[in-house]
Length: 197
Image 1 (tube, rainbow, N blue to C red):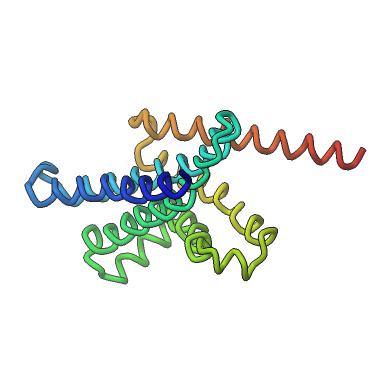
Image 2: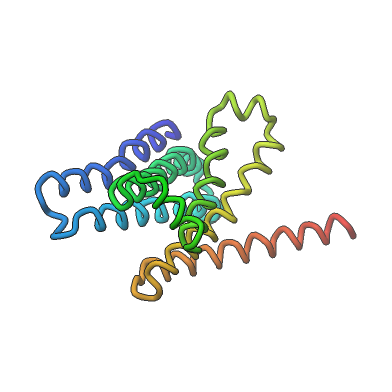
């Protein structure tokens, strides 16, 4: 069952990108398709990121272990869409003119936050294989993958700075991350107190 769940999520993760590609090819993205593609890939990446974080609490509530098999493909699709988002910005928005890219990166906070989130997700994507888990040992791998939390916070702030409160999706995802992070910290603090008692 775990393998089936993993394959379904792997295949399903491609659907938003395929839909976007189809809309691009058929002219369904309006008069400014570059901007739509830029924002859509960013939203897809953010949704997949929050969905990846939500798997832990959902599995704990449902006690259905195969659900955890979705974590790796969800995380990889998150990174793929975030990387596509950054690439589209550099290519379609900036025309790959590195002096323009550098000028904006050094002056615009929301771009710096977005880049920081991408860089935090990079080692997580690179260590998503079983071989990396074995080489790092589970404890080190687990600690490294805690970077997903600051990455999520940075990504949420990046999205909020771009869209403010105009997007209910960003507000909803921010609320979900806040609840999950607060709960996780509360549980960790409680466990720490018990171990120190």
